[in-house]
Structures are given as C-alpha cells and as structure tokens.
Length: 264
Image 1 (tube, rainbow, N blue to C red):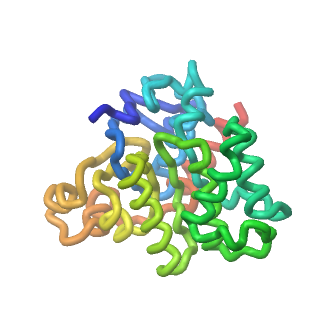
Image 2: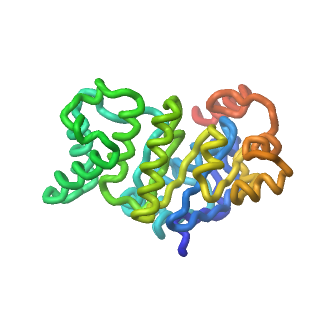
C-alpha cells in the first residue's frame, strides 16, 4: 500500500515558540490512525497544517500525493473533516446543509440528490432530511457532519475529537458507520480522541505527540509492550506524564508565550 499522508521533519513555530518539532509520520491508504496527545501537545497544529489551514515553518507534507502549500485545492478535494466544534448551520435543514456543501465542493448537480440521500440514509437521518438542524440532538448533528464530510468522495477523513460529549450508544453507532465506510470504500481515517479505550479499540496504528514531538508510534499492543503497560491509557501516561495540562495549552506559561508570538 502507498502512504496517504506523508510527513517528514515537520516544524511549526510561532515566533520563539515551537509548537511542532521534527514530526515524521506516514499513514497508509486505508488505515485507521489515531493521533493522541495531551492538551497543547501539537495535535491541532499538525492537523491544521495537513488540512491547509496553517502553513508549516519547514518540512515536507504530502496528502494523497499533493502538497498542502503548493496545491491546497487538490488537498482539500482529497479529504473530509469533522471538527471538534459544531460547524453546521442550525437555520438550515439537514438536506440544505448537505446541498450547500455539495455545491461548494462541486458535486455535479445530476449526482447531488442521490448522493445526499444515500449518505443521509447511511447515517440514519434520511427521515429527518427536512428538519431544521437546531432541532437535532448532539449525536444527530455529529452524524450529519460525518455525512457532509463524505459528500465529495474523499480519500481521507479527519476527525478531531468526533465523539466528545456523545453518549456511549451514539459513540458506538458513529464508529460503526466509520468502520463500515473504511471497509467498503477504503477511506483512510485519521482521528484524535481523549478516550483511550476508543483509540485502543478502533485504531490500527497510533502516534503519541507531546510538547510538539512524536514520542511513540505503533499499534496499541506495541505501545503497551514498549512501556510494559496493561492498557493504552497506562502507556499514554507513562509516555506523557501524569501532570494535568491546561485546556488548550501545555500550561499557563506556554499559553502566554503563544499569545505573545501571535501578536508579533
């Protein structure tokens, strides 16, 4: 298999602050890959560079063979994304949210109706296609975001904390949809999560990042063996430490430094 994502010696600095340092990782086509790390470890910064939102300071990236810096259009056509924060329009219906996205991504008009209907059926929302999104539960919105991210036949889908705040039943249903998609279409899944048991159960390969550096990579079993741990959570804590991290940053001092760097 060929690599769907190739990252070599990737760096991102904000002024004097290094958020990502010499990250090298490869994700094979059709893989289910978990990217784990404490708050402020560099996960979001890395994903933003992979998805063309941030320009790297240095290093090489290829997503589906394309460079996010020089060919951002082709990279964006290659992936779908489910953000951690809601990104739907609550004042539109489920169908209208899907149709708007299909137009933005250039899905041919002759295919839109059938494609939208198929995906809404896939995530069990077809019967609610004419309902306003504001009436949906958190789980229903998340399923709609997944369907929307798949509209343009992406080769890869990025999922940033996709099950945060969902009840166990909805989480299980969501992963069932995604694993079925991976099996049927070979779509590569790249996700972040703070649920260690979720990563251990779903991911085939895992990379752990801390302070901007990849500290370990492999299967869940390999990471447990490497750290002589009984679970992935125990291995994670062994590799990253037990100190509580500030939400959205690696400590108050790091957050202050980042703010200063952004102002420059």
